Amino acid sequence: MEIFAIIFADFSYLSYFYIVKVNTLPQYPTPTNGSNRTNMNRTETERIVFVDYIRVVACFLVMLVHASENFYGADASGLAGNTSMLLNESNRFWVAFYDGTVARTCVPLFMVVSAFLLVPMKEGMTMHGFYRRRFLRILPPFIAFQLLYTFLPVLWGGWSWQEAVESLKVIAFNFSPMAGHLWFMFPLISLYLIIPVVSPWLEKSTAREERTFIALFACSTLLPWLHEFVLDEVWGECFWNGFHMLWYCSGYLGYLVLAHYIRKHLHWHRQKRMQVGALCFLAGAAFTGWAFWWRGEPGVVLETPHLEWSWEFCTPNVLLATFGAFLLFSCIESKTCPGWVSRISRLSFGMYLMHMFFLSAIASWMVGGNAAEPLLPVALAIPCIALLSYLCCLVTTQLLSYLPGSKWIIGA
Image 1 (cartoon, rainbow, N blue to C red):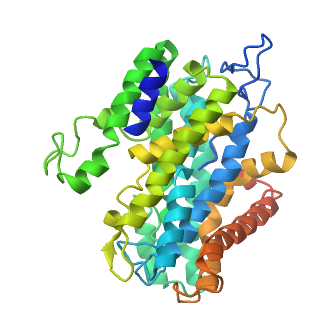
Image 2 (cartoon, rainbow, N blue to C red):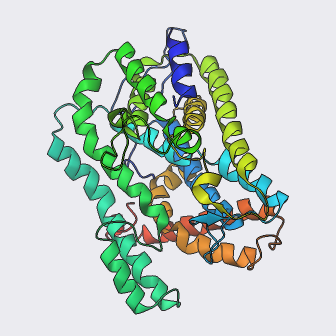
Image 3 (cartoon, helix red, strand yellow):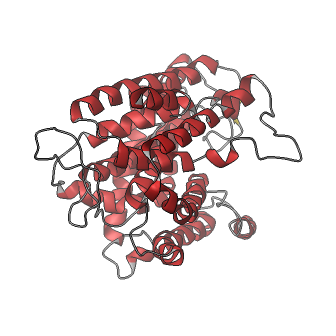
């Protein structure tokens, strides 16, 4: 029954980053009784090696997503704004492949990692103690980069001082207009806020109870599809009520419970995790890529939400792919992590925060104002933009990490 409940949750919907500075939780150590089943219990002496690999890979996938946007955006920025247009069949296929099939799990993976490491809270940790510890890690760098994205563009003519001042008013309530990727910080903050609330339940919940919640969460991920193909307002939504029937079982909280379920209750042996993980990832990722390709039509301007109808991070296909990807990463059972992997993992938060500074410039050079004929074929241009951005961010964060007080800027 367990596998059927999980697969059901996956298909109906069962990711920056710098979630904790040091991984001090277990790494799925192999037991000595010959069962080859994983041990999910916390320890204070072992690192979860596969979590470092997730951070390293997911950070690159974020940049792959944003590199892809340069090949279907219809506004002057080159990125996908409110409207999109694919210029040819090549762009249609490769954007669907890289942005949809390969990289769409990036944000949910970071959300799952967050919950996997932090839930339930350590014994004796109070709500305010948890908030103090978490927010001192992420808020100073977040605020610093909000200001950098607001004022640095003035130096190279990205916008005027007046526009920067107007942006300054915005960042008191939202992310900077020059830094759309910082939207992620608000769901992450929300996840941190709810962790002390749900931790007591997760400490006592049974596997069946958690599967029930995951099933409800999975049903809630159908909402974007219902909005697209059935009705604009469902399950009680109307102009005076934006809270639908499954509101309190939806969103990234579902990933939080899923992560806890995997760590505490999903005691599958490595071979089964690999098989089920590969199947779920391939099925979810293939559908995600196909959905974009199917809706896209070269030469036609489309509203971006309609083109990306199945790309929201809380949709059944992305959930399925994320669950599969996490299981595949969990098959890494090494007790040690290469130094370069752990180092990039620790720098990944800063890399995420700054990457649009580099990616925008590199993409502009690579695309050259013509997304139909970039400097390299689109099949190579998208990963090259992402890789060059990744390397520039890595070098920059590494250098900044040597400065006194660097944790207040890049979190490392």
